Image 1 (cartoon, rainbow, N blue to C red):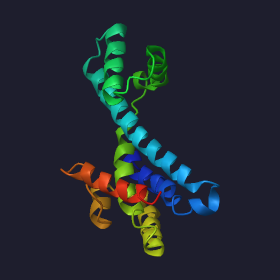
Image 2 (tube, rainbow, N blue to C red):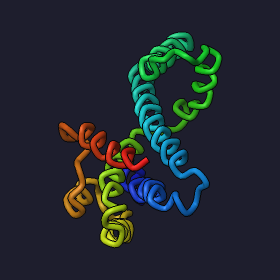
Image 3 (spheres, rainbow, N blue to C red):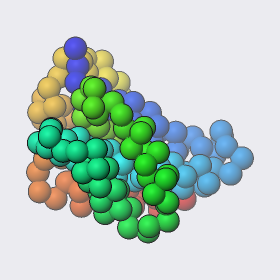
Image 4 (cartoon, rainbow, N blue to C red):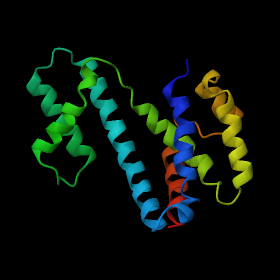
Length: 179
Protein backbone atom coordinates (compact mmCIF):
# COMPACT_ATOMS: atom_id res chain seq x y z
CA UNK A 1 0.00 0.00 0.00
CA UNK A 2 2.98 2.32 0.30
CA UNK A 3 4.35 4.37 -2.52
CA UNK A 4 7.81 3.54 -3.81
CA UNK A 5 9.18 6.99 -3.03
CA UNK A 6 8.58 6.29 0.65
CA UNK A 7 9.57 2.62 0.75
CA UNK A 8 12.81 3.10 -1.14
CA UNK A 9 14.20 5.45 1.53
CA UNK A 10 14.64 2.46 3.83
CA UNK A 11 16.17 0.32 1.11
CA UNK A 12 18.62 3.00 0.01
CA UNK A 13 19.64 3.66 3.59
CA UNK A 14 20.75 0.07 4.05
CA UNK A 15 22.98 0.39 1.00
CA UNK A 16 24.54 3.57 2.34
CA UNK A 17 25.05 2.12 5.84
CA UNK A 18 27.22 -0.50 4.20
CA UNK A 19 29.89 2.15 3.57
CA UNK A 20 30.72 2.29 7.27
CA UNK A 21 31.12 -1.49 7.39
CA UNK A 22 33.03 -1.80 4.11
CA UNK A 23 36.36 -2.23 5.88
CA UNK A 24 35.23 -5.49 7.45
CA UNK A 25 33.47 -6.74 4.31
CA UNK A 26 35.62 -5.82 1.33
CA UNK A 27 39.24 -6.41 0.51
CA UNK A 28 39.50 -2.90 -0.92
CA UNK A 29 36.71 -0.98 0.81
CA UNK A 30 37.58 2.36 -0.79
CA UNK A 31 36.94 0.81 -4.21
CA UNK A 32 33.51 -0.39 -3.09
CA UNK A 33 32.58 3.03 -1.68
CA UNK A 34 33.80 4.85 -4.81
CA UNK A 35 31.98 2.37 -7.05
CA UNK A 36 28.77 2.61 -5.04
CA UNK A 37 28.72 6.40 -4.88
CA UNK A 38 29.42 6.54 -8.61
CA UNK A 39 26.52 4.18 -9.24
CA UNK A 40 24.27 6.30 -7.00
CA UNK A 41 24.90 9.35 -9.17
CA UNK A 42 24.52 7.37 -12.38
CA UNK A 43 21.24 5.84 -11.20
CA UNK A 44 19.84 9.24 -10.21
CA UNK A 45 20.61 10.55 -13.68
CA UNK A 46 19.15 7.45 -15.35
CA UNK A 47 15.98 7.50 -13.23
CA UNK A 48 15.39 11.21 -13.82
CA UNK A 49 15.99 10.83 -17.57
CA UNK A 50 13.72 7.79 -17.79
CA UNK A 51 10.97 9.69 -16.01
CA UNK A 52 11.35 12.69 -18.30
CA UNK A 53 11.12 10.39 -21.31
CA UNK A 54 8.08 8.66 -19.85
CA UNK A 55 6.30 11.99 -19.33
CA UNK A 56 7.21 13.08 -22.84
CA UNK A 57 5.61 9.89 -24.15
CA UNK A 58 2.38 10.58 -22.24
CA UNK A 59 2.19 14.04 -23.75
CA UNK A 60 3.12 12.88 -27.26
CA UNK A 61 1.03 9.76 -27.66
CA UNK A 62 0.86 10.22 -31.42
CA UNK A 63 4.65 10.37 -31.83
CA UNK A 64 6.03 8.06 -34.46
CA UNK A 65 8.58 5.36 -33.64
CA UNK A 66 11.26 7.57 -35.16
CA UNK A 67 10.21 10.57 -33.06
CA UNK A 68 10.23 8.44 -29.88
CA UNK A 69 13.66 7.13 -30.77
CA UNK A 70 15.02 10.61 -31.51
CA UNK A 71 13.63 11.96 -28.23
CA UNK A 72 15.26 9.11 -26.30
CA UNK A 73 18.61 9.70 -28.04
CA UNK A 74 18.39 13.45 -27.32
CA UNK A 75 17.60 12.96 -23.63
CA UNK A 76 20.24 10.29 -23.27
CA UNK A 77 22.94 12.45 -24.80
CA UNK A 78 21.83 15.48 -22.79
CA UNK A 79 22.15 13.57 -19.51
CA UNK A 80 25.37 11.79 -20.49
CA UNK A 81 27.35 14.42 -22.39
CA UNK A 82 30.52 12.36 -22.71
CA UNK A 83 29.10 10.83 -25.88
CA UNK A 84 31.07 7.64 -25.35
CA UNK A 85 28.23 5.23 -26.08
CA UNK A 86 27.30 4.18 -29.58
CA UNK A 87 23.79 4.60 -30.99
CA UNK A 88 23.40 0.84 -30.76
CA UNK A 89 24.13 0.80 -27.01
CA UNK A 90 21.78 3.71 -26.43
CA UNK A 91 19.08 1.96 -28.44
CA UNK A 92 19.60 -1.16 -26.33
CA UNK A 93 18.86 0.95 -23.26
CA UNK A 94 15.66 2.14 -24.91
CA UNK A 95 14.69 -1.50 -25.43
CA UNK A 96 15.33 -1.98 -21.73
CA UNK A 97 12.84 0.84 -21.10
CA UNK A 98 10.03 -1.00 -22.89
CA UNK A 99 7.80 -1.03 -19.84
CA UNK A 100 7.24 2.71 -20.25
CA UNK A 101 4.95 1.72 -23.12
CA UNK A 102 2.96 -0.80 -21.07
CA UNK A 103 3.26 0.15 -17.41
CA UNK A 104 4.14 3.45 -15.74
CA UNK A 105 7.46 3.22 -13.96
CA UNK A 106 7.72 6.57 -12.21
CA UNK A 107 11.38 5.94 -11.54
CA UNK A 108 11.82 9.46 -10.26
CA UNK A 109 10.75 8.12 -6.86
CA UNK A 110 14.24 6.65 -6.54
CA UNK A 111 15.76 10.11 -6.85
CA UNK A 112 13.69 11.28 -3.88
CA UNK A 113 14.65 8.19 -1.91
CA UNK A 114 18.38 8.66 -2.55
CA UNK A 115 18.26 12.28 -1.40
CA UNK A 116 16.45 11.51 1.85
CA UNK A 117 18.54 8.40 2.51
CA UNK A 118 21.75 10.34 1.97
CA UNK A 119 20.61 12.91 4.54
CA UNK A 120 20.27 10.22 7.22
CA UNK A 121 23.28 8.14 6.14
CA UNK A 122 25.75 11.01 6.48
CA UNK A 123 25.36 10.73 10.28
CA UNK A 124 25.78 6.98 10.51
CA UNK A 125 29.56 6.88 10.94
CA UNK A 126 29.56 9.52 13.69
CA UNK A 127 26.31 8.48 15.41
CA UNK A 128 25.68 4.83 14.48
CA UNK A 129 23.26 3.93 17.29
CA UNK A 130 21.19 7.11 17.02
CA UNK A 131 21.11 6.91 13.22
CA UNK A 132 20.21 3.22 13.18
CA UNK A 133 17.39 3.90 15.66
CA UNK A 134 16.12 6.62 13.34
CA UNK A 135 16.24 4.09 10.49
CA UNK A 136 14.26 1.55 12.56
CA UNK A 137 11.71 4.17 13.63
CA UNK A 138 11.32 5.34 10.06
CA UNK A 139 11.00 1.80 8.73
CA UNK A 140 8.58 0.49 11.36
CA UNK A 141 5.44 2.03 9.87
CA UNK A 142 6.88 3.26 6.62
CA UNK A 143 3.98 1.99 4.55
CA UNK A 144 1.55 4.19 6.47
CA UNK A 145 3.34 7.51 6.10
CA UNK A 146 2.86 9.97 3.33
CA UNK A 147 5.98 11.65 2.05
CA UNK A 148 5.05 14.90 3.80
CA UNK A 149 4.51 12.98 7.08
CA UNK A 150 8.03 11.53 6.81
CA UNK A 151 9.58 14.89 6.06
CA UNK A 152 7.94 16.39 9.13
CA UNK A 153 8.32 13.49 11.59
CA UNK A 154 11.95 12.66 10.74
CA UNK A 155 13.08 16.20 9.87
CA UNK A 156 13.99 15.24 6.31
CA UNK A 157 14.74 17.59 3.50
CA UNK A 158 11.70 18.03 1.29
CA UNK A 159 13.19 17.23 -2.11
CA UNK A 160 10.60 19.42 -3.81
CA UNK A 161 11.91 22.55 -2.13
CA UNK A 162 14.56 24.87 -3.50
CA UNK A 163 18.09 23.91 -2.52
CA UNK A 164 17.48 20.19 -1.95
CA UNK A 165 19.91 19.19 -4.69
CA UNK A 166 22.60 21.39 -3.14
CA UNK A 167 22.02 19.74 0.22
CA UNK A 168 22.22 16.30 -1.38
CA UNK A 169 25.56 17.18 -2.99
CA UNK A 170 26.82 18.42 0.37
CA UNK A 171 25.87 15.11 2.04
CA UNK A 172 27.30 13.19 -0.90
CA UNK A 173 30.63 14.98 -0.49
CA UNK A 174 30.65 14.09 3.23
CA UNK A 175 30.30 10.39 2.37
CA UNK A 176 32.77 10.63 -0.53
CA UNK A 177 35.37 12.36 1.66
CA UNK A 178 35.66 9.20 3.72
CA UNK A 179 37.15 7.27 0.81
